[in-house]
Image (cartoon, rainbow, N blue to C red):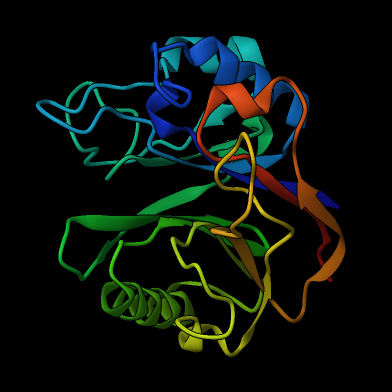
Amino acid sequence: MLRLASYNLHKCRGLTGPHAPGRNLAVIRDLKPDIIALQEVDFRFGARPEALPRALIERETGLVPAEINGRSGENSLGWHGQTILMRPDLASAAVVRRLPLPGLEPRGAVAIRLPGLTVIGLHLGLARSSRRAQLARISGQAARIAGDNIVIMGDFNEWRHEIGLESLAGFRVIAPGPSYPAPLPRFRLDRIAMSHHLELIESGVFHGANAREASDHLPIWAEIRLP
């Protein structure tokens, strides 16, 4: 059984600042994931330095970031603001890939291949036409690089559940609950899509560790069992 999660950090600035990554690390620590896809881990402009300090991650959470070849900048943690953290024993067996995505703004997904499971972390664009094209690219790439057991998770930026997700027809899409905006969540922007071979045990939105103050999104989680 694995505990998976997704969390948009909003550059570790809470709703309005200041930059306080310790809050986000406390949320991740209390969430206790085996694998977590993170969005907005780097600052957006200039050299795109890390907003979530790499040096603190393992000490505070027990997890390690995916080793991404070709990060956004020399001092970036992720690629297009994204990374995946995982238990060290899983990281030792992980093969990491970048998946470039189409759209009006630069976007990309990060995939890790583990024995028996592929996890793809994403942060889709603001325009629905871009999101549709990006999901089509991701589902096509997943069919080529992964086996039967695939999980796609992240900030889908999709306000509706019945449209915009057509490329995920072969997946079970889970939106555990409203996760945005964090102080008074109303919208299910954060989702987990999993192949039907995987068993969903439980899922939810995490409200602990002062998560409402740490970011503009609340993290979501799911416990799954591999076949």
